[in-house]
Image (cartoon, rainbow, N blue to C red; front, side, top):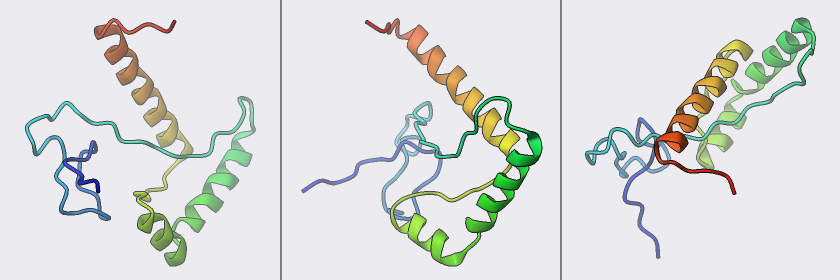
Length: 107
């Protein structure tokens, strides 16, 4: 049997609200939230990206979709393609710094 001690996101999980975050336990620097999204090839026309983004955001507002995704542990947010791009770049920068600071290298 496993018992969750903490979660590595900035806020508590809706699925396991009794489990504290690492920040609540005194480790605010631990934030390893995972993200999901759809990425199109470079050069995809902006209007195609906008149509896909609108359709995806519409699906993410459907109660049955939100309920099922939440049930399996996802935090459903939606948003713009530009917002997701900024998030990906910020995560890449964050993890690159962590790897550099820890002197971790690919072998």
